[in-house]
Length: 231
Image 1 (cartoon, rainbow, N blue to C red):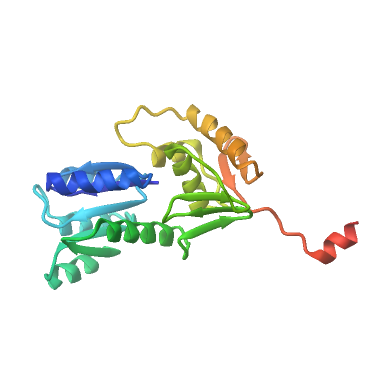
Image 2 (cartoon, rainbow, N blue to C red; image 1 turned 120 degrees about the vertical axis):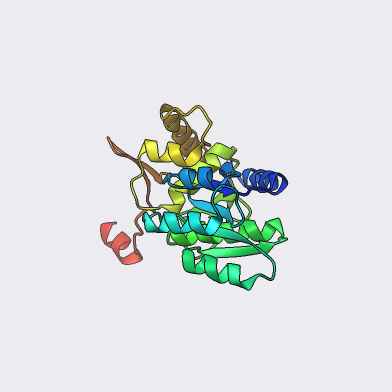
């Protein structure tokens, strides 16, 4: 999963980027409104954290431009505490949620997790597919209750696939959502990571759709009557 942080304060920007990376997100960042607007036009972001007081172009104007262009990426705005008018203006401009400064980083992480999973149609912090369970809060992955140790990239890949269960996802889309902007990308490495995931999970959930990409699908349930009839 990949995020964009647009915040002009260098310290806050760095703190947010570091916190999100520790939570296994790929993160790009900007400290300028015009640059941030341009970056946010990229469809590879799963959510955007947007400060309102930006140089170059203010956050409300940036957000309005995105929404006018049909860009539906979930946006969490950062506002000054107690300035209720900023919150209202931000929500009316198309923001999905807000956090007031100063904030606790745990709250920002929780709100981003909620935005990302709601955008993908999930209501719970835990995403399950057959025996596979991914806890988006703890970043813990289990199969039949047994923990599975994954690298950061493996976790990002599995998380993106599980957030979009049942949809065929191309290698190029996975590359866009797994790597930061300045990373040397190679779509061929996706096959390597898919192979590692299959080996570690040891359960047949990740399907290769020839010529199209990959899909995660839950195994079909066989009811007791059907099983008995086939025996």
